[in-house]
Length: 288
Figure (tube, rainbow, N blue to C red):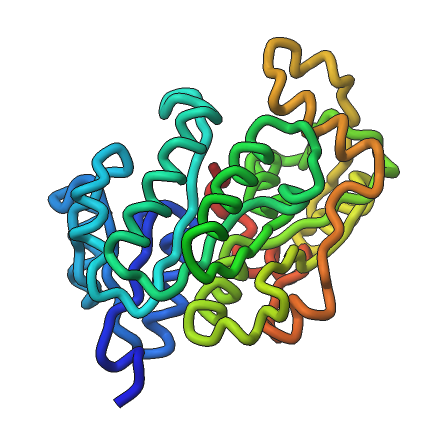
C-alpha cells in the first residue's frame, strides 16, 4: 500500500484560491485530502465535504489545533497571507512559524510551501521577506519543497470588464512581467506533494508566460476580440502602500522574477500562458 493510499495529504488555506487549486489537483489524482479550515460550517468548507474532502478545524494562531489537524499527514501544503486585515507581514511570519512548528510536533514527514518568486534574493519587499522567514523556519525543522510563484494572471481580471479593456499598472509598458495561473500553482504543488523529486534542489520559481504591459494588452485584444490598451501609472499612485511600492519598484529594476520556465513545463506540461488562461478563465476572480 502506497503512502497516498494510507494517509491524507493535508492542505492549509484550503478555501482560498491556491489551496483550492491544490485540492483540485490532488482529487484529480484520486488521493485522500484533508482540508484545514477555521470554520467547518462555512459554505466553502461544506462544499469541500461534498467533494469527499475531510475537513478539520485548525487556527493558525492556535498551535494545538494545528497539531491535531496535521497528525497522520502524508505531506502538508502550506501557504500564508500578509493582508493588513490579518495583521500584515509580521503576523504572516508568526503564523508561518506556528504552522512549521506544529507540523514538526505532529510528525509531518514533509511540507510543500507556496512562497513568492524572489523571496530568497533579499528583495526588501515586506511580504517577500516575511515569506522568506517562513521558508527558513520550515527548512530548519523538516524536509520542505518551496514553490515560488510569480505574478498571478488572476490579478489582471479586474481589467476585463467593459467594452474596452484597460490594464493599469504602475509599470512601464516595455518592462516584461513573468506570470502564472493559480490553477498551475495547484498542479505543481500537488506534484511536489506526491513526489518531491520533481523539484530538484527543493525549490522552484514558476511561471507560464512573460509579457510586457503592451504585450498583455495585445494578447487580450486578440483572444477576447475587444480593444485593449495598457496604461502605465506612476509609482506615486501607490503612495502610502510601502509594500506594493517596493514590489513594483523591484519589477522595474529588472531582472526581478527569474522563473525556471523549462522545469515549470516539465512538471506541468499543460501550464497556461496568458493566451490559454484568457481562453478558459477570462472572467476569473482577482487573486488575493
